[in-house]
Length: 338
Image 1 (cartoon, rainbow, N blue to C red):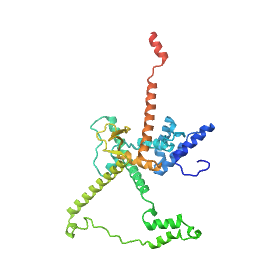
Image 2 (image 1 turned 180 degrees about the vertical axis):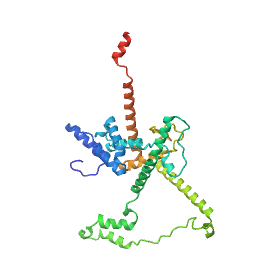
Image 3 (image 1 turned 45 degrees about the vertical axis):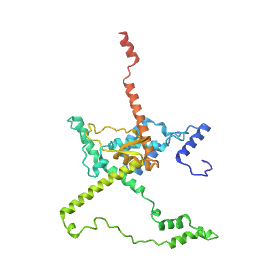
Image 4 (image 1 turned 90 degrees about the vertical axis):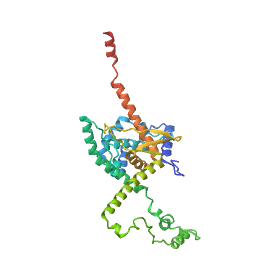
């Protein structure tokens, strides 16, 4: 597969094969180029490097995840997913993407996350979180736009004429002259015989039925504009809910009455109808799905990778806390002797 490739294999299978060959010949492979891959992903996500790169370096040096090494196990998550998981955690920490309803607020929905407390430290945390809100909203808009653009069909897939032209000019170029028969000339015949109907009839909607007198009334116009805005908001939320449901995610409403706005939120899976459902807020899901699109993997496995890295960080923090609270043996013996 590697030295005489005669089939297209996935990156995960290629990694497993490379790890197997290295194991057979006794070669100790280094981890993948984490910083090179991370910089490439940040560039593709249009996220400023100076904003999150320092935190990414700290998380990488602190955790040193073993998932950055190639593995012979075909069932293990690929290395690129480990890199993106670390980036997602860092982005969530920097932009405070923890279910506070920034995306819903950008639609104009009234959401109050503040708890009724007068603590000075909490008030400072709230003010800092409000400063980040605009940056987070701009980030989510950019990520959502990137996802929508990438999800659009290719230009030659939009209609039959474009597809036939693409096949004639790129896929089958030169084959009609080289062919002894008229096999490949059928493409040209189909392309010539297809006439695109450019006169598309627009269906009449409820706005076409409005009379001139109704349009001239300011109150009715304001009411209609308000109704259209509300329908647009509901449509956006419904579209996101549908997308989440298709990927077996469950939409969670924004958090309200939160005392600490700088707390990192850990998501969990739950069983429903005999299957695992991933519960998530809209802010996190928008970040998750575009990152999954960049690494060319489904959103569920991307979420699994993020949860795996979060568990590793939690384990490291727990171990450090245990070490800091250990009593040195010499001190324990002196206290016993006294």
